[in-house]
Amino acid sequence: MPKRLLHIALLSIVCFAMLGAGAPSTRFDALGHKLVCPCGCGEILLECNHVGCPDSDQMISELRTELSTGVPDSAVLNWFVVKYGPTVLAAPLRGGFDIVAWIVPFAVLFLGIAGVVLVLRLWRTRQSRNALIAPAPLDPALRERIRRETGYDSQ
Figure: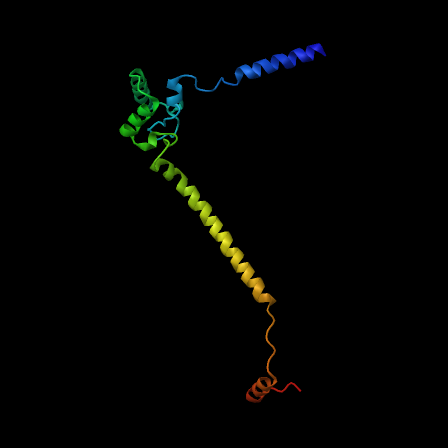
């Protein structure tokens, strides 16, 4: 029993020590993971595995150069957006049209689905309401006139 407790304690210590192992710890890693490689591979800049990538090495050196100037992170990201365009960002910057451009497609999809559900419910309630209405009884005088004109005798 003590041996098993020792194993559990050792495993817990290792698990807690490894929790932050994959997280970017430096400013370079943090900003490099917010940028996308412009070569067309669609990978994060620091994780671009495109063999012989013409853009990632240049972009990484530009990132190091910008970080050496001491400007804030938002200024570095804005510099890359100005040079490479807004598609270089892995996620939009907070504020303005960028958030709208990311949210509107999902909002339109949700509103479209909600509209279809609403129309289907309206059709279903209208159909069930019409099914409950009994036909009006036919006037005996009208019934007799129809029989005379059509020549139908059911007697």
